Image (cartoon, rainbow, N blue to C red; front, side, top):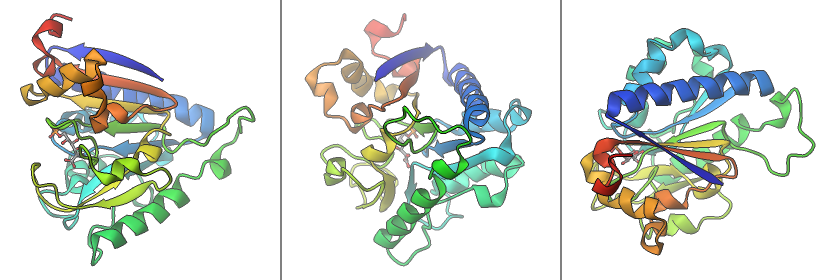
Length: 259
Ligand code: 6PG
């Protein structure tokens, strides 16, 4: 795995570059395999990237051939202010011609979080199976990919998706989706449904969008490659494909902010 670091003056520049990278992956995926599969991130950082995809780049993606899933979700109804799906719908999905049947959200209206996770596991396994849609099967491929692009954020504690430091979910080796108890130290403190390391590490491209001074310590430790940095869930995402870290200057430690 190669970890490519790109740094930006501010979140606007970061968002422009991220949207352009998503467009490039979408084109490549559609031409190679007939479709583009994208896992969206929650939190606040990706919102501007989503808006740029819905406006400046609206005509640059073949939305008819795009499939959208979610890397994690808060266990709140889909129209709740805290819902990652709601944010993505308002910033992006309602504004582009993607078929409703190509958007696969976490069923967060299920009676219990484990039921939502089980349902989403089935959905992802069904929808992301590649062979049926792969016009040019690559016989040298040794492992199946999950999505073409997985967008991810990083929390100030080093979490990514809803994989929190020291959580038992980090040990998962086979499931793609798990329920998560409400974190005590992270807002919103509600139960979550998250994709797992086996899912994220099988993405063709994992792209982290990181902005804000509250990430500075954790980003410094992760980029240093020191053992302390390796225990953060975000640092455990090591896809068989590529990983790109898009970081704005405010999230960089002082010794790197001139980069
Ligand atoms: C969520 C996320 C989470 C997020 C990070 C960064 O549901 O909260 O998916 O992993 O990406 O907490 O969030 P910000 O972009 O708001 O800093």
